Image (cartoon, rainbow, N blue to C red):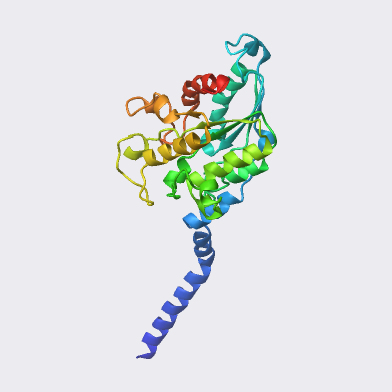
Length: 285
């Protein structure tokens, strides 16, 4: 190689080194802002905690005095709510304030975004129930997250006397449901427990079509998860509000009630479902 060529080669190498050093901060920044893996997302979700002190709604006394539910079994009771984002997003207060006003009730929310019944799904409902105090009424409202994250669905027998309360089944949706019911009744044997099924979502056909055969990674459809929720409640004699079928929202009108993500409802969506929930909670049927 000629001397002149060697000088050119050295300059090129030097420029490359300076470019890399000068941009090392950019490369590091890119590394820091890379998309999180699902394992990292779940690890972060598990660090979150219920914040019931920030989510307490009380009734408007004037509205409560005029409520048609005065004299019903659950008027004037204290209600605790457990679930994922659909139970705790700010928009959900529209529905819960309807309960508070119509039932003369104090409503406290333990829900945490990303939560499911499975012990593998975020700040699980199992953990939410463990942290809760004593209430008159406990509402279990979930879980789309178990389905969308392909947590095992399980069966109504999971974590019951029938399998000796097998703790390995707590990773399933059904095991989590049965754990929550048992734990609540340990806290308050006189408690009323009510279950709200998953709501529809519109990001894919399986989220709103009960006849869809499109499974998640565990091989189950969304309809399978909802039926399993009902089965667990049937075993324990827990009243169920079938929100999936009573919501009255479908492919023709969901844009009026859902955000752009097609998963979370707007205030208008909660305004639609809130009176249905209040009517159910009044007498538990």
